[in-house]
Image 1 (cartoon, helix red, strand yellow):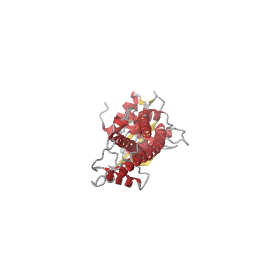
Image 2 (cartoon, one colour):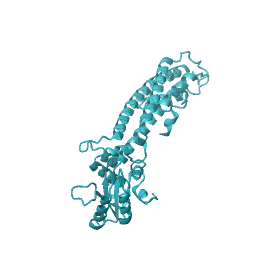
Image 3 (cartoon, helix red, strand yellow):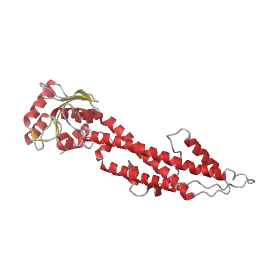
Length: 332
C-alpha cells in the first residue's frame, strides 16, 4: 500500500520511464514475438531509433504494469483481511438474525468489485499498447534487418508510429491512476488494518446477542479456545466461556448498553458467584460498551472480577490489542 503515495494526478508517463519488460500477458505468443523483435533490432549499425516514441511506449507499459501490481497487491491484501476478519466481521454482520449491516464488509466488497473492473480496463489498455509496440518494432525490423551485413544497404522503409493512439493510451493511464488514488483515499483506514478490527460505532449498533458473539470472536482472534459463544435463558450470568492456552478458564459476562449507561454492582456480584462457584472459572470478566458505577468498581476489586469498559473495548476492537494485554496493563 505504500506505493500508493507515489501516485498522484500528474502525468504518470513522466514519472515511470522505465523498462516495461514483457507485455500483453493476455497472449501466449505476443511476448515471444516482441522479445524477438527487440533482440533483432537493438544494436545494429546505422540504427537511429525514434527514442522519444520508444521511451513513451516503455513508460506507458511500465505505468500499466505498476497500476496492475497495485491492484493485485490491494486485492490480495483485502483477501487476507477478509480471511483474518471472518470470525470478527461475521459476528457483526448477521443480517438475517440481527439486521446488522457491516460497513467494512460493504466497503471491502465494493472496492474488490471496482478493482476487478479497473483491472479489466487496464488489461485491455495493455492489449492496445502491445499492438502499437508491435507495429513499431516490426517496422524497425523491416528497416534495419540487414544492418548487420555491411554489404547490404539499410532499407528506407518508414517507421510505423501511432502518436495519436499512444497519446490516448497515456491519457487513459493517467485517468486510471487518478481513479485508483481517489478510490483508495475514500476507504476507511480500518479496512487496511493488519488485524481484524471493528469500529466502536458499529459495536454500539449491535444487538445484545451480536455483541456476545463479537466478544467470543475477538477472544478467538486473540488465541482463546471458545467453549461457549453466547448466553441464553438460564446461562448462570455467563455468556462466553473460553480457555486461555495456559489452561486458565475464563468466564465472561457481556453487557451491551446504550451510550451513557453504567453496569450496576449487582451484576458484578452475580458474575462472581456464577463464574467462580458454578463454572469453577479461573478468571471472571465483565465486558461492556458503556462503563461501571463506582459501586461496581468497588465490588469488582473486592470480588476479583476483571472489568473491560468502553475505553478498554476501543483498544480491543478498534486498535487490535489482545484481551490479555488489556487485562494485565496498568489502567489506574
